[in-house]
Length: 202
Image (cartoon, rainbow, N blue to C red):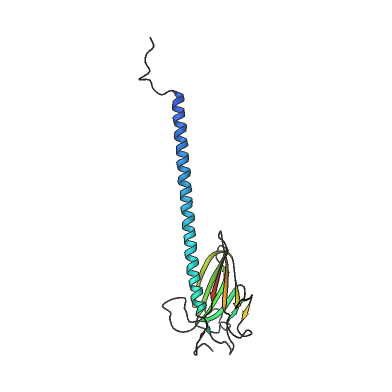
């Protein structure tokens, strides 16, 4: 009479099937965890980028919106082209440095990795041409860009350059076009609320 198999162990085939199922479940769990970590990393990077963009946009909006009608060599002063603009503003880069009129140069430059950035240089020396290195503060406003450029406008009319002397004043608005790396292009349309200041730099 054949003996019952109640106490018999696993066969080799059953053991191999169990190992294969365990390996498959482990692979699924690892893949799911890996995708979750990558998604979290992407979300964190996107959040940091958006935060940096908001901070840079706020600085630009505050400074341009508070641009003042000043003069340099008895001429209206606001100059700009695709990669640089210079103007006077009553808003400093650093909150503790209040009082006075500041000379801003906003420019498209490059960081150490060769990526485009929008940066600002600020000085209280109103004649930049006499002392181009006399900069009090340099700061990157928006980084990790593929490209960036500025345009200027009055009403619905858009200009590639602006010269306050020839155009007799400041533009109505400035458009900052940014192409962040790995993101869609962003247009920041910043209105200029020109402040008439009797003690503007001469």
